[in-house]
Length: 152
Image 1 (spheres, one colour):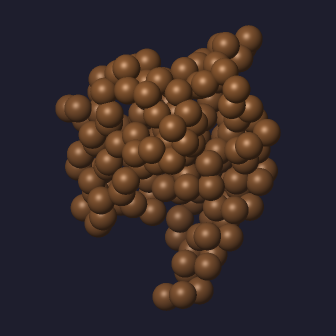
Image 2: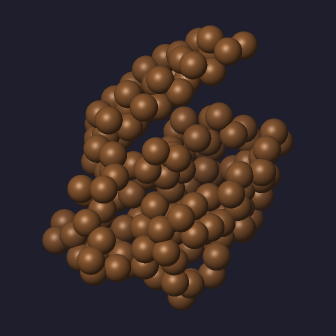
């Protein structure tokens, strides 16, 4: 996996180049090379580091139909509770079973074993055109991190 990487203050953030991103910090990666409309989603490195050590992750159940902006789940950390909104309209096909017993896997491997769910997108949603490509998300995330450091 190739990454764009930056260090802001004492934190290093990575953005993989093989997926797309929502401005809120959710990544989406196609499940198949034929882009069959199934997307694996998860939290970006920036969002998981910014939120803190995860203590709990609760996602909506398999079969749940989502509209863009619907709550897909909630994560609790030692610092905050974060409501996660869906960047895609569709149906939840699968939830990461590891999150129930070991939600900290999101902190340990946000782009691999720490994925959240697999969603089948609505047929009319052109995600690649609507969401951020890796370089655009990288600049967005870097700007957020730098602004936070300046505001301290």
